[in-house]
Image 1 (cartoon, rainbow, N blue to C red):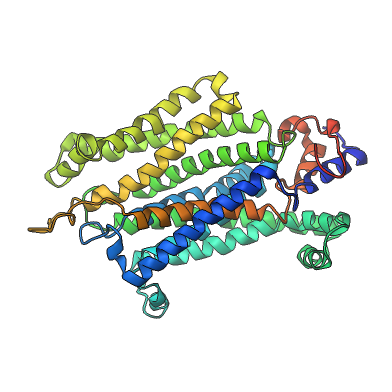
Image 2 (cartoon, rainbow, N blue to C red):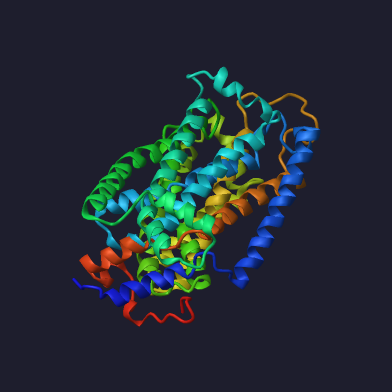
Length: 459
């Protein structure tokens, strides 16, 4: 245990508050670049709305393409909030404190764009209200909409609750900000004074949300899996889809979390708070999740390949040796097997560059894997279309699809950046409280007493 002096607390708060609203040169460049990509995607979507889905490569064979693949990817990435805020809370992991707000920001952005993807895929999005007025409870699509909506509102609450004490700190200590921002912070703080009663109620509310959000998060990914598993089609007609999606989501979320904290650590100079300890422990989580996901892949593809039933044969041949083989084997080798081998070495797990490199491989493999779940399976229906026109029995995404897909990924990253402009990246009060109760080593932070504040900004 170690008791932080008031001077160190003040310096921690000042350093973290210095990131609020601060302009970073590299960050400005990326915000402009990502915004331009989003504008390009918006123009492409307007063209799609005006001319119809004919401007895409989706046809009767492949009625789902990049958009639904990205839906499954975003839904998967969003599970990182439940991993950090719920699972690690129940396990008693104190090192989660500096990661909580980052994880919840990733979850919020991912689940928001997951909700956009079906709208992008619709030829007539103005008829979305029919889903509410004429939705059938038997339809897995309705389940997916309800699950994503519930998870989004739950994630907003989970993002806001730990923010209340930090907003109160900003209300009291940020004096050189516009009056309207002061009023916003005052309202968001909800009269927070930091007394024992308020702290007890806040922690009870956060614990309750941890209990509630975990089954909701799992249900989102399970329902997304059921969306295809309840379709009688080669590659989808399997009961393993639920856990396959859930653990694939945990793996992808852990990988993207590593990348995000690496970027924030470098860009915002948060070396005191996002330390090699966090990368090493996230790498250990990624190793376990990747190994288990490889096991699920062996079950998903190995069992039907051993039997090589007629209905599965053409799909498996396409994946193993056909048109999709390059992507398939990349996901299995570079996205799963190689990361497992690399992360098995302690030297790699303790190297930030090594962990980030492996996370890039895993994330790229996870993104391609979502494409392989959707497109190849649709190219091999039980009853092929007779005398299909050229191009109808294949799928090569058009420029319109690539632009809209790229803008969705850019918007996902841009929203995360924008969420950290009005609020600190790190949850200040939990880090300080965690260090006071358990020490720097347990929380994973380093050398808080060495923080230097120069001209009102962090180091």
